[in-house]
Every structure is written in C-alpha cells, then in structure tokens.
Image (tube, rainbow, N blue to C red; front, side, top):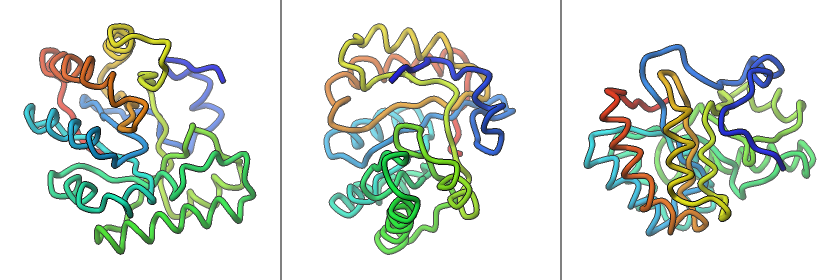
Length: 207
C-alpha cells in the first residue's frame, strides 16, 4: 500500500470531517498501537525529559494486558485515543463487527483507566464510509499530516528522522508507533527528533 510522508492535499478535501492538521503554532505528536512494555515506557521517558506532550492512540487489548503502563499515559498528562480493541483493518470487516470492536476499546478504557475518550484513529488509516459515519457520531476521527513510516524495515533511522524533520511544521499531527516493530528503531531517531522540535522552538500539545 503506498504511503506519503506528507499527507496529500486531496485527502482533507475528500474527508473534510476528519482532523488532519490543526491551525495552531503547536505540533501534535501521536503514537499508535501501544501500550507495549519496553517501547511505550521508552517514549514516555523521552517525552518527560523534555517536558513534551503527545497523544497515544491505544489498542484496547494492549490496555487490557498492560493496564499499569496505560495508566502512566494518563498520569503523565498525555492524551488518549481509541485505536480499536484488536487493531482492525476496517475495510476488511463488516460495520457491525468493526463498531463493536471500537465500542469494546471504549469500554476497556473507561473500565481500566477511568477515561471516556472522544478521539479515534482508524488502524492503517482505513475504514469504510459507513463505519466513519457511525464513529464520528461519538468521536473525532484524527488522521495525520506527517507519516514518519517508522514501521518500515526498509527505512533507516536517519531516513525516518529526515522525513519527520522535513515535513513537520506548526499545526502538524505527526504519526509514530509504539509497538514491537519499532522497538529497535525508535531509540535511534526519536530522541534526535524531539531535540529538533525543541531547537525549532516548537511547542508540543496533546490533541
């Protein structure tokens, strides 16, 4: 599936009700697929060192398995969003199955973390129009402006860093992943990127 480091301008025109970028001077760091021990806690430590904030789009099953780590996201002042319970690729599932999985994630977040979330990001960025219409009745659907492609094993840490730095600008929603696939590469580029954000005078905020 093709990917674009900078979201094409056509995408927000086709899906105007989804959040792609913000009209602010801040930037919005987002992390998908966690919480995962050894990865999410690394990200939290790096953010804390610099006083930076992010939004984590969590998988419900991971929250169920790693509730204490998920709780740390809340305690450290970061934003939380729904990323389905089982990381479902929406276009492969019926709306009924998909929406039930979204609801299940909401329930585990409320039960384990005591939070009622209003943000949702579809895994892989794909969902059907029918699914999107239903989800948007209860959640803001958050996409992204910059895709780091940190999950791509063909890219080196320096390439991921270059992509992220080149395309990040005020208002950007930048997508990273705190999952097993990025466990090795994150330490090789994320600290440098976070330092770059500081050096540019860019303030981070949760969504």
